[in-house]
Amino acid sequence: MLKKLMSSYAKRVALPPGTLVHLGERALDVALLSLIVYDKDTHAQYEPASFDEAFGYMTPEVVSWLNITGLHDTALLEAVGKTFDIHPLTLEDILNAGQRPKTEFFPEYVFFVLKMIRYDDRAHSLDIEQVSLILGKNFVITFQERPGDVMDALRDRIARGKGRVRRRGADYLFYSIVDIIIDHYFTSLERVGDDIELLETQILEAPSAALTTELHRMKRELLFLRKATWPMREQIMSLLREEHPHITEDSAPYLRDLYDHTIQIIDTIETFRDMLAGLLDVYLSSVSNRMNDVMKVLTVIATIFIPLTFIAGVYGMNFEYMPELHQPFAYPAVLVLCALIAVGMVMYFKRKGWL
Image (tube, rainbow, N blue to C red):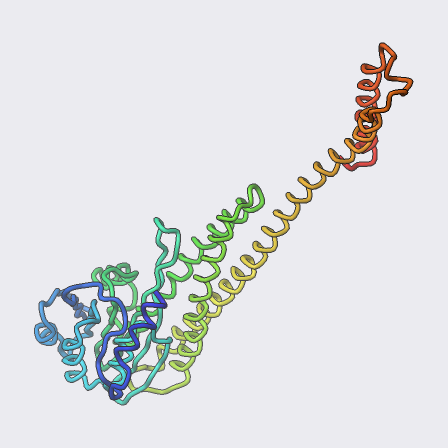
């Protein structure tokens, strides 16, 4: 994924700043739009076929939430930018699927970028997708690349009039979207924690090379997640520090709560990274202990056979005058002697605690 994203940067080489070029994977043939408009008394949801149709429903008297899925349609993004006076560099950042989490303040809007994560039960891995938000006067616009997100519970709250969202302005809707995305970090990390515990059990019981591949995959995922969360902490703090007409003072406690959640997520990620580093040490120790056990058994066997080999070597010499050669019970006597030596050595090793 990272390699594809880096190769796509070649599309933007030598182009003027603000040129709209999609950097990412095309997930849809046609961009999808969904619109929710509401106030404390009314609510409506639309699936407009075009941006012009969607804009016709967005009036100053209600709060509007426009979600655009599919960033390959640069003409659609350009129309949105012209209608809401969005800076070309902001549109350029929206089209960059590898954008670092950031916050920018403009007179007409606030721009915020973060990563949305979901846990894939089939692949037992994290699905990371970028979400961009534009907060304006009485509206919020969200941009994502692929269909499906973690915000259905918020849409349901708006539809049923539950909670504060219907009674508050667009800044509270903005907070609610970021909050529900961050809340899913906790649920996804909980599943990752379960995977780490399972991996630890497997490494302790039956360490194998395949487990190291899984271990390094999880470490790589947590590294990407760490790169997504550390900048997000500072960007949320920017929302708290900066004053903007579209963010009211009433939103400050909720933004502080987002900041606290981000700190908890970072602590959890760092804990998991330490656990995975420890699991690698456990794996190497387990492999080393198994190798030591094998070497101990082989050493004991070789030690037992040293005196037996000596006896066999002595009586294997082709001298004519060896007194024991002509005794009728010499052969079974030597075999019994060898057996007694082997049994005696095993008992001695056990008594010393070497077996």
